[in-house]
Image 1 (tube, rainbow over the protein chains, first blue to last red):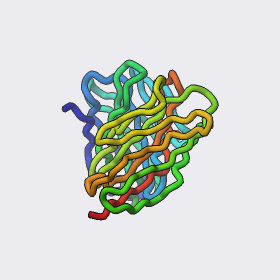
Image 2: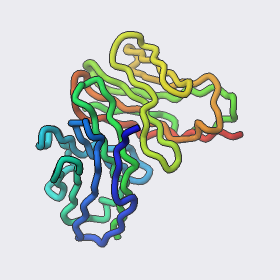
Image 3: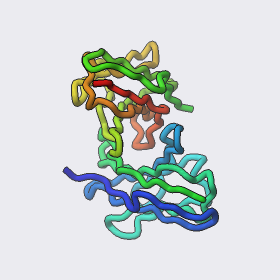
Image 4: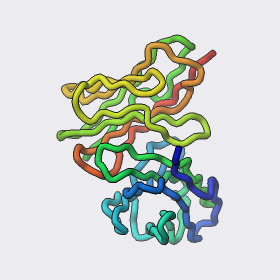
Length: 114
Length: 114
């Protein structure tokens, strides 16, 4: 069964450093999403991406964040200058075109900012 | 703004006990409702979803949920839990007709004692 994959599974970085989290969505999916979950808190929406552009973003997704689909398979989330409060589990998700389809989630990347 | 409340943070049950996890949402319009499950060390998986029609929705692994519009609720139920149901359960809502993001509740951790 096709699935969303994410790398790395765990990333440790120093405050102020740039990180890139990678996702490979399911191949025929057209909608892509990033969510995060700070330890002990709820899963929060960050951004959605369709047709090579951001379609929605939350207030969390400020200028420090960016997303890119550099080729036909990868979908990346970049945090330009990490802060301690960026430490969280980051989930990528993808969805087929039709609105009645579910979002399929990846296993997540645990980001730890020291 | 849309929001989702899950009232139980941690539920502990013995095998064969019945389960009901509460979920309430706030959104005035048409909604799509979801329950996701996250088994230890695994990614979020869809248990069931409601878009329209019969408000009693049956999902995988014997789970069901009932959409009660007047109560803004979408509670998850299972008549007899198993040890393998130990996981975290997330209720989520999406504005009807939207291709967009999911709004998640904080999650309920279910521990089933063998």
